[in-house]
Image (cartoon, rainbow, N blue to C red; front, side, top):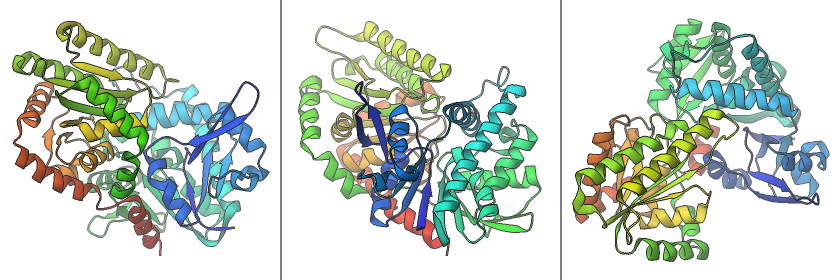
Length: 474
């Protein structure tokens, strides 16, 4: 039985299966995994996650009760849930990623979508079943009075479900995304909106990355549930229970990041990039091809910068990492294609025999990303909406003399905005001007801003972020 448990859709490791049936293990992807992996091992936390692939399911079926650590894998304490694939796909793709993500990031083309019909009703039942599987597993694994930390929009119903099974537990829920304002949250069917809010209010504490997202959640509780909200004290009271609202702005572990960024594979990539770029200035972006990351507008802004500043032709290179994401969904496949089309148009218009103005990298390559951070003169982070955005924090740590062009709609803007070049992510021309401002910024000013950005970025590393939430549970 475990005294501290973490629940998330994605776990700290993933498995692949060869044609011969052999399993190989590697670190799981995503910012949450990066932030929590080391912390969970240090504190002997049991991590409960879902099996995401055939390889994961193969590993789970060889593990007693899904406990991979008890099957000999060096994972730290880990239980992986083998949820029926059809249930998982409906819960994960249809509800979590195609509905909740779209609502919280304000992504819908509202004249055409969403429409909630009988099919969505079946998908919502799968989301409920998926959350219930997590709640039951946590109830089985938790010792009396244990602390359970439930992560993100995939598992919004778990706190209330878990409380009904194990009222002795101390439960928190943390939202790593933005939270939609009431008028947009109201796109959801009324009963679904209420169930989501009541699910999170089953926790003793509901955590958010910024005051803005916490405030939007409280506004929704007041609007949808008619709950009693105390904004000064950050509490929501509903159905006889009071939930505290916490704000914890996740940062990066600067020391660990630098240790990884100095390893030989990163140094090798730095040498290759220096040879590729030469003595030109380097503009870097690192993103998944996720709709909210706004990659296409960023590329268009770079093209407008090149059109407005011919003096920079041949003297600057834009290195854009756009790692494929969620290709199960047609919107994401189409967006990735749009990124590639835009990149090709820039190359066709501006490239010369001895100058490639844009290098688009679509292969997930973490060491090369770290090398790019270290070489950047300007970091471009322009999401249309983002819970935090750790790229905006990792960049200044690894390249303290770079300028940060940052969307005001990223959660990180609340902390970093004073020393970044803030932009409206929809304003392509303003973004183009900010890119130029970053390139011509005096070296002294760049260094002063960079030093402050790096200190702010590392102020709340994952260890402290996690510890603060544990402490908030009492």
